[in-house]
Amino acid sequence: MKKVTVTLMVAMVISMFAGGAFSGVTSLRGDKELTANSDESDRRKQVVVRGGMERSYKIQPPVIPHKVDKDTINLKTNTCMNCHSEKTFEEKKAPKVGDSHYVTRDGTVQETISSRRYFCDQCHAPQLDAEPLVNNQFEGAK
Image 1 (cartoon, rainbow, N blue to C red):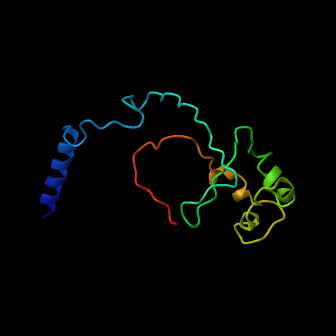
Image 2 (tube, helix red, strand yellow; image 1 turned 90 degrees about the vertical axis):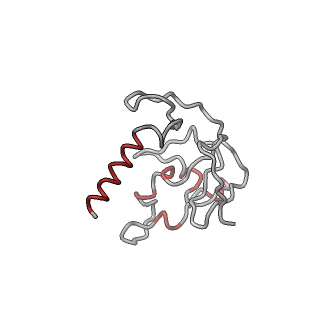
Image 3 (cartoon, rainbow, N blue to C red; image 1 turned 60 degrees about the vertical axis):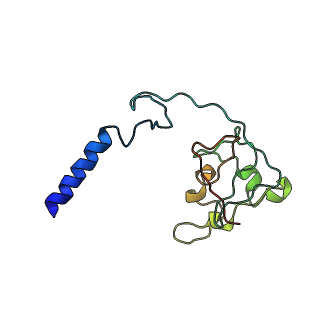
């Protein structure tokens, strides 16, 4: 049985590398070698939606409905908090950062945003006016 399995695996590998299984398929990088640098991507226009965007599924982090090209998030500065902090959100008419963003890993509630939620763009992404890289039929939960 073990000999048959090994033989089948070897036959599959040989047929894949013979070009039959992958002929005509190119990667999103095009026909560049793996060690070559990819072409710089085109700058896409950011989609700005007044009032925010509908989420695709229940626990999806909200997408960013405004321009962020001048925002800065680093160890010393987080300009998102200029509008979204508990102190400024009403004045700026912006959504307040969720209460979960003030909770540490140990469950302690802090006065300032937790370090594990500090880098907003890890979860929240701006939307760009771009076609999908691959065709799909994704439909979010309604």
